[in-house]
Length: 187
Length: 187
DNA sequence: ACCTGAACACCGTTCAAGT
DNA sequence: ACCTGAACACCGTTCAAGT
Image (cartoon, rainbow over all chains, first blue to last red):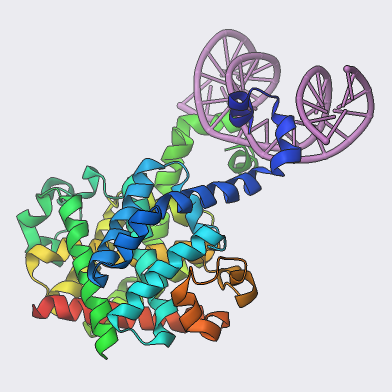
């Protein structure tokens, strides 16, 4: 609040009649985030005419890009249901992807939440540090754990010392998500 | 810090020589969270001997239960790589699930991150309010959006006015995750 | 060794007072 | 109508001083 007031060139208290509270300001910020996520009018036409797997991948990458552009506020997307006009437009794009994939109408809302939950969870993990290099537990670190108590680590061995390439990993994740949507549609 | 000090019956500053900083304290908290997540010794035996789809579902539900028991600290799991002994033990259980499912060794770490990212993202969304009732955009609210601009919402119609049953939705999500793991193993 | 008091540099928010 | 000043009730952390 105080930082915002500073940037506006006003005392913090002058903001309150305009924005109500910090929470209300964050609600407004989520709007802006989602509006930014939405392609502009010509981009939207092009988006709508591409095959659904491409659209699903684009939404996945868009989510991640949004998080990287706004790491400090991205997490508020988890605490506010998407109810503004732009939010509904974003959700509509995903609903349409699922409908075009052949997902049954009744399953569309659930799969929308599944897909966005994964993409948002991945983006949040990345910007907040869950995937940081330290996660790769080196063999020497594993040595400190009672021998035989982590059999899968022992079996995978040197594979675990490789730092993952998060970019290409996410691409493969989105491929799996596309396959899952297709499978759900077929069943 | 001040609240912790109060509970301990000491001034806030007395904590610092013991815990270092608030961040270090949160690191310790994550340990406790993961230790709590892990079944106790007899439970672990039983866990290890059950079929892998059951184990995957149990991990999914365990993540959600953990979040509900500790809503205020759950989010720190996103900002710290899992490096403690108990964290490695939890990851090992998931690696073993994937290995038993027949996932190729090289794909196991990626799928571990995919599965946990979804489960953690879902749990976080739930406790932070993203799935709250308001998310269901009623038709009257949609009326305020330019007609025809949300075709998928129009097509799905009254389906969207139904409040979702999050419990059974999560069960179906985990079924889809099991199917995805099986599909990845088969390919 | 361990703890305390005072202080520093912060927060979001209320409310009476100013123009 | 719109903004300000002072104040309230908070934060995490440092550092010299006490026992």
